[in-house]
Length: 382
Picture 1 (cartoon, one colour):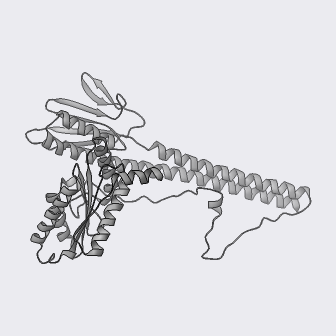
Picture 2: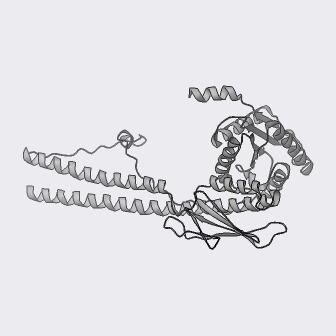
Picture 3: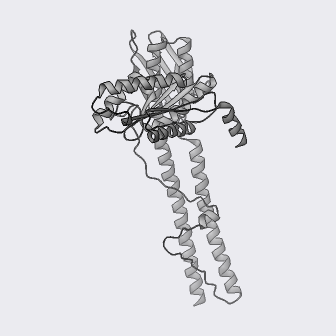
C-alpha cells in the first residue's frame, strides 16, 4: 500500500513538472510573438512619422540642405526601431544610419540595406511629395525584435522552470523524510476568504508572467476622426522634441485644449483643423481624450504660445458663435520647458494642472509657470 502511494505521488510530481514546463514554453512562445508584433507596428508608425517629416521639411528647408540633413538625422535617432533610411531623388541617393556601416553598404556608389537576421524583412517604402521634384522616395529598414523584451521573457521563462524544479525537489525531499521516520507528512493547503489579497507572490518576489492579449493600436500617422495625430503618439513625440530642444537649448511649450460643449465628431474635426492653422504643423497636434487637443510647440516660449492660444480662442469664437458663446466652453492649459531637463510625463502633468486650474477658476487660458532654479534644487534633493 505504501509503495503504491509512493508511485502515485511520483506520477503527480512528474505531471506537475510537465505542466510547468509546457506553461513556460507557451509563455515564451506567446511573449515572443506579441513582442515581434508590437515591434513591427511601432516600426511602421515610426517610418510614417519619419517620411512625413522628410517631406514637410524638404518643402520648408530645401531638399538635402545642411539643415535638412541634420534634422533628418535627429528624427532617425529619436526613433526606437528604424535603423536606417535611404532617400532617392533625381540627383542621387542619400543614406542615413544610426550606426555607421551597421545597416547600409555601398555598392558602385549606391547605398543598399545589409541583409541581417536582426532586421525585419518588411519593406518600408513611401513616395515623398516635394514641390518641383518628382520620383523622390524614401525606404527604411527596422529591427525585427526588441532584444530587451526578449531577454525579459527568457528570464521569466527560466524562473518558471526553476520554480517547477524547486517544487519537485522539495516535494520529493518531504516524501523521503516521511518514509524515513515512518510518518505520513500531509502538506497543508492554505485558503483565504473572498476579498482578501494574496501576498505570497509579492513576499517571495516572484514575477508571475503577464500574458496580455494583443492590443489593436492606431493605424497611420493621423486619426481619421480628427485628421490630427493619435493620442498614443503624444508621449514618444514629446520626448523626442524635448531631447532635440534641450540639445539646442531651445524652449518648448506643451498645450492642452479642452472643449466642453462639442456635440459631434464633425465639430471636433473642424476645431482640430483650426488648431493646426493657429498653432503649428499637423504632425505636432494630437487628440487628447474625447473632446481635447494637445499641441507641441518646439522652439517657442510661453508668452508666444499664450498669444497663439488667444488667437485660436478668437478663431473658435468666430467659427462657432452659437456653440462657443461663453468663455467657460473652452479651456486651455500650457506649460514650458523653461531651461529645465524634464521628461514628457512631467510636462503633460503640468499642462493638466494648468487646465484643471482654468476649469476651477472659469478662466479660458492658464499657464503653468516654473522657477528653473527652484526646479533644479528640487531635482537635486530628490
